[in-house]
Length: 315
Image 1 (cartoon, one colour):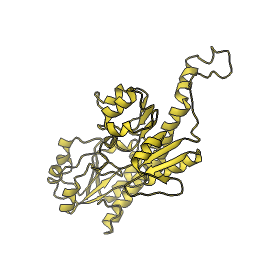
Image 2: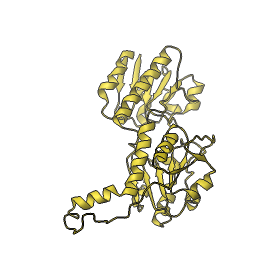
Image 3: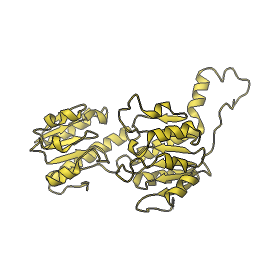
Image 4: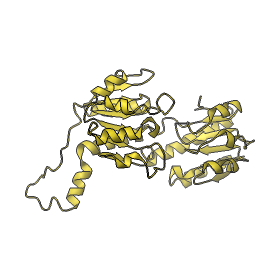
């Protein structure tokens, strides 16, 4: 059996753990794979593994032995699932592996904005504290999270984890999802009420036809003035120019995003020109413990598939 991992660099320094795949057969690792390279690389593969490589119908059609695609990700919008269903190719994802890491990163972004830790660190290291005459130079306006309202768009495992943390900070929690999920930590509401009532809006929904660019010019106009916008979901849920304009106009107070529409980021990304924005390079999910858990899930998915009882299959 031949296994091809098309973008192994996306799981970082996990070489030793990827060796666990060797028990299934021949393993070929490619650091990254461009769309025009895919068909040749998976031509004789029985199993293909990927994170973000685009699996087009054209490329898969040139891989007659391909019967299984294992995702090192929860989202699967990079796979032409119409083709895989039609040709009997099983596709399995890795759900919920990064819940705690993404929830933690979400609050790292929120706290970075409200507690001004980076600003004070830079002030101190540049000699600012040495030059002051008071024990506590109050240079930047910081704010408590207690009493603030956070609106969570998408209330799956990550959204629920964010809500639990928010309650620990004594925040009011609103949530919105297509399935109208809720629990003891959140109050379900419609999207317009959530946008207009929240001091913080954080996104945790999948990218699909319904959510693509749902945060557009009209949506940002409904935000509470001065609100903080957080996106650790997918870049495609945001109209980046609309977000840039909302920030530069001052209607939005700030934003923090871990993902953009085109990754790696392009030089012409509008968000590079936005005021009051924090940008991290899609690493919310990539804690050491999370990566180890992810690899174990992918291996478990392969084992279940080979035993004839596949798990975590995508629709």
